[in-house]
Length: 513
Image: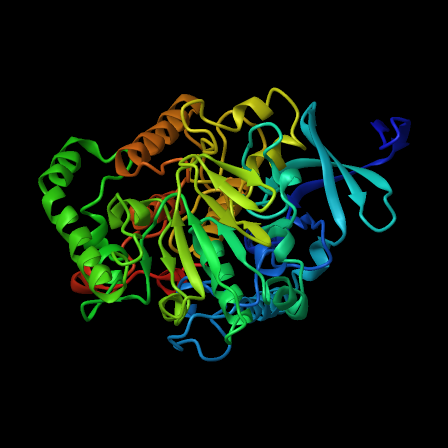
């Protein structure tokens, strides 16, 4: 039996149900983990009534994948139709694919829907989870030998900027919402929110760009108003995956290109070689930037970033532009306001520290999500204090992107980004399954900590946006290490020429499991 304080502060007793493995979250990482760990009969807790995670609950009408569909598929379940279609799949197509995968491998039977994990504590050798049924509001305790957290960094908790006293959203006479609120609107509600309104969208990443496009489409015609994007930091955007007639993959997602970039624990000779090849790496970045400056009117709208394309790619911040985005800007339906990080509300809109004002009827905060708060809200001390590096808040020290060296019997999936997050989640789930089946042993804790610390130092040297834990510039090397642990060959191609210069994707790993 265990004691739990309910919302009224009353103590209630609940029976602990014991099982071997518990998984929190049924997004992409959660269903990948459930499939690879199915020999252990895991229980998956999903707070909502559906699988899909951010694809289901944090997508807009226009949301599309940032990569082509064949780069976003499970190794043992190719897209059923149109696998080689060069279009970017919509979020609805991705949800269909995820549901098809879950049905094919009978994953849904492992998922407890409408089950929100409220609290996690470690007692003895078990993790105890307090799980609330979101329909009946009853609470049940579960005990697990091992827990896999797949809650992700996005959705659920909005990241809201801090404002000076009496200058927050309460001062504004119009409507303020976060992208998390906008995701909940249906098509008609979203159109009515923007139609005929002066809209300000704060941010210039993928969500903000999609929002501005939806706002522009809702304001067509002479009576339509403009949407102003408040751009604090300009990032590189690309219209497609071709640069001067060459595929973008040739610059980043083959083995020879990744050899140009620093990777963790690479040794003295590779470090020296990376240093010697750094002019080539910078030249590739300039080559891509030259195409984007030619193709897109970035100079005209003051949107040229003050950092290299390489930095955005290394921090997983490159965004694909919606079709006709700058055409809408040319028509006056999308405008841009450069601003510092200091801004606040006045009754008619947004005010900036240069004393300029932006009038608005609606302000949408595309300011991201607080994944750290999601974890902090359910984790107890001392583990809560171990979730972040002191020098890189928001980055967890995860060995192989999965195991925290100081937190026992727990894994984290979906907290390290790459150019293909679905593939990363699946390959780490395979690694985790082999670990739990004792097919290999973890290194000593100091060795794992040293490895994770080196990853953070590499990110710091690679990009100023290092607080986003991204491995895109060494993702092949990262997977090589996982292959080594699994006893697989890390070179996956048929010949050395293909190995050096052809694009790496999920299908290269489908033959050994």
